[in-house]
Length: 408
Image (tube, rainbow, N blue to C red; front, side):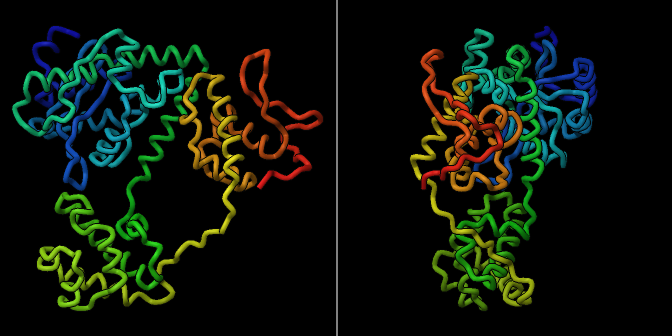
């Protein structure tokens, strides 16, 4: 870290911010972390932004430097890699601020999981294992909106990016040595895609209300209007949705569809303050839902009733998954969750949109799971290798169907 960074850890002016962005573009990557407050808020509020480039690290304070255009531009620069550790929440916050997901990215937690560091290694543990440095993590629950920041807060914040780029370089070397850099790039693209579709339109928010499918189509129309109103109100008040009206109360409102203030007041779980301040809006939302034409009512998706797969069959797939994971020293949970194995076991011929059936996961383990289900492979112990593995049945080839049924 340079002397200038040691004596001046803050980027306080537009000129300093532009100078940092120039250095980051020259290096073609920079480290990035954020500290935010999420409790009792609709959306997490940004406290500070920590950045590092080469041997410098600094803190951008949004309360002092309100014009972040130069920083937002580099977030979208496809020639500059943004390096995070467990960066999903950081990416979500920055996406809300800029309207787009920063790309390209390198997430050290995601990447480390692919080369034997465990499924969700902490930043402190990763720094210790890759750099031999023990971090003092004492400010994790601090108030990042309080000003001025204490010396301890500043040091804690800078540590989160001080070792990020060297640790990322070490993990990148491991990925390249193992031939898994493409795996990591696939995972980074998946994270970016998932964040890019996180925003649910207010009119569709009702599908995320607990127990929404228990309502009739008419009352679902009411819930749709109520949930849309709650979404707007929560965002305006910057309060969690449940602090405006909890899900169970919203469903009860939709089910009973009160038509007057008196009927609203009879719903005991509904906060009287909400009735006092928003009765007119609630009643208007309910009325809109009750007046939706029949042909425009929300539809409840029909779920095909499927027999649950045999627990023993799912256990067998779990064994196959573990064997594949152990062979390449990754945690089984990175490959697939039990719920995914249950879905595959229930209908191995279905066109399922699951990570285990796509990309590097499919090449490593997904095709073996399907081969076992189709009778093409069997599971056994290889004494010469000292491990459990799958074996191709004699006379069978990938893509053929065995002439026996999968046990129920």
